[in-house]
Length: 120
Image (cartoon, rainbow, N blue to C red; front, side, top):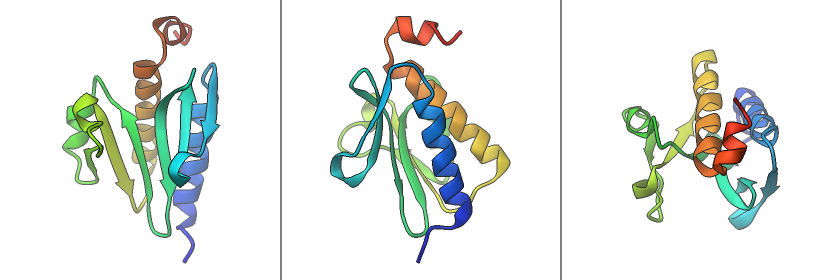
């Protein structure tokens, strides 16, 4: 069964947003999409049959994100460092906007201060 079309569109939009940041690259460790800034991952993403899951580093809004029913601390010890994993089965405009905001926060949280400052 193919992933719902809306989830595929969201994945494509998130990928484009992440790769639009300065000095980013895409790799595929462990079968997952990883988008990195200068070799440091700021977005892990996987589109499955019925869900889009992704992990981002949220140093400012992580606690608020974890209050959502579809978010949890990232496994492998990353959760204690501010990483949050989100699993979506549907998409709304508000959720799309939130995902883009999380990508921005994660990029800024992982990128060098110089690169993060260049966005402002």
